Length: 326
Image (cartoon, rainbow, N blue to C red; front, side, top):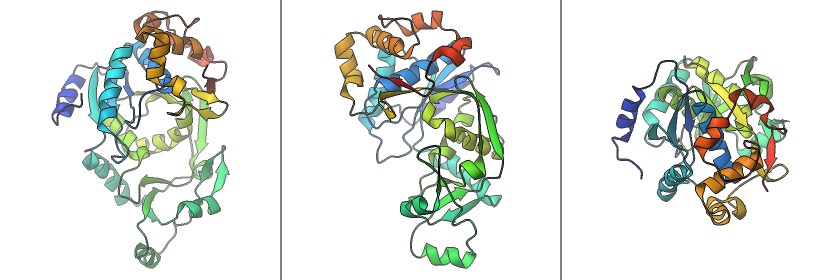
C-alpha cells in the first residue's frame, strides 16, 4: 500500500481543501512492528480529539531510521488503521527521503551559531549527566566549550553528533489531558541532539519540520513524550513556526511502569482480533479498558465519536500517567 514517489504531491494537493482555521492532527506510526493495544489507544484518542473539533487527520509514516523500518509493516499499519475504522484524510507522508527539508532547518540553526559537535559516548553521558525525572539525563554541556583545535583533534578519533544550544528559560504549555507543564531547558534537559553521529537527523528536529510542513496543529501522543514537548516548542520558535495544541494521553502498560511492547502477545492486534472477533470488538475492548467508553462492548469509532466530549479530557483518566492493560 506504500504509494509511489508522487504520493506526497497528491497528498499535498489534498491539504488545499483545509480551512485556514481547521484542526489537523496526525497518526505517526513507526513501521518497526505490528500494532498493539497501546498504539490503538493513542491513535483512537487522536482520531476522537481531532474529529470532535471538525478536524482532519494526516497519516505520516515515521521511517526516519531506515534500518529498523520494514516495508511489510508500512503496508500492514495502513491496512490495520482502515480495518479498525481509524480513517485519515491526507497522506501517507514518509520521513524517508525528506533529508533536504531537515537539512534546510538544520543549516539555518548552524548558521546562527546554535549547533555544536558532541563527541560524548553513552558511557560519558551517563557519567557526566545529572538524572532528572526518572531515567531522563540532563546533558552537562561537556563539549559545548570545545576550542576549534579541540574539535579538530576529536574529529580524527570519532564522528560527532550535533547538539542544539538551549537557553536558561522555561517553556510551558497547557496540555489538554495533563494540564499545565513546563520545563527549564538548561536545567531540566540540557543541549540536545538534532543530528546523530551516523548522519541521520534526530526525531526532535524531523517531527517539528514535518508538523509545520504538513499543517499539523494538534498533536495527540503518549505521556512519555510530554517531556520532549518544550524542546520541540523551542525549535518551533527558532524556526519561526507556531505551537500546536497538545494532548498527552496515559500510556497503556503491561504492568506498573512497563509500557506495552511486542512481547505482550495478548495485547497484539492479531491476538485481539482472535479474542474479540471483530474490529468493533477490539475498539470496544480498548475503549472500555482505558475509560473512553463506560463498557467494553463492541463499538465503532464513529459511535464513540457521537458520545465523545472533548471538554472532559482533563478528568477522563483517573491515572493520567498509565493505564493497566487487562
